[in-house]
Length: 328
Image 1 (cartoon, rainbow, N blue to C red):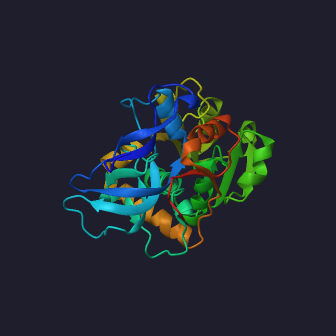
Image 2 (cartoon, rainbow, N blue to C red; image 1 turned 120 degrees about the horizontal axis):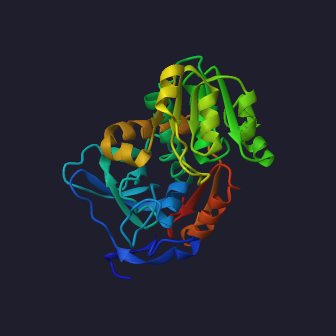
Image 3 (cartoon, rainbow, N blue to C red; image 1 turned 90 degrees about the horizontal axis):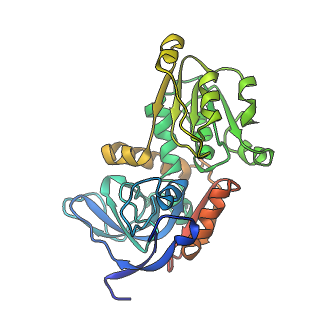
């Protein structure tokens, strides 16, 4: 491998986890307003499975990876306030590339870690996607107010584990999570929820001011039905793979309910400064002990195994991939 080549996990064609291939690719260089990062850890997420399956239109061959931790390798023209060698967490969701030894992203999407020496790079890699999303969804999209009631689907998953805790940090009055199987109830209970129920029990759980749904299908319809007047349903995924759910506008009109969508990639591309602020808020909360993240680790070469675990629905918390030579 030459100095201009790095090892990365690549999607050469759309398909199952077996298509993921470790190979040499060119080392990217930062452009104006960008930074290059020597990657220590990369988060593994459902979003990367969608890229691999072809559900999201990406150019092939493609290096997935929407979040990383590591050290700044180089700064592009015009970047200020950052330094080569600095430890960072970063969102790489706009263009991907996190499943490699070097990645480039906007300087706005970087959170320095110098002030948090006790925050390991493994944990730092688990924050940019899920924890940032939790703050943006509840604060900026749902506009959570103190005392409001919040329902979160998939409470034991990566982003679900953060939504319950962030809702509590932002002053929610009652926070309920749903899971798809009894075995996940105990895991979800440690993530800020007052109560964790099975997904088919939502109709008996009362009314909510905010429902966050990344599951889709029947869960989406149940979430809309559970909203109180002036309630807000935030749609941010379709992990069930179900057909799209029709949400009639006239029903929203007559019941005073609102449906909003949130996509972290689109938001980060359109509003990088706001996404970066939320990321830095998440890092500070985790470093201060206000956010708990359960992290499991695999080497980068076992990215396919990470994908299979996530697709099986058996994971709780967060999987991160250790990049070769990362150290701590």
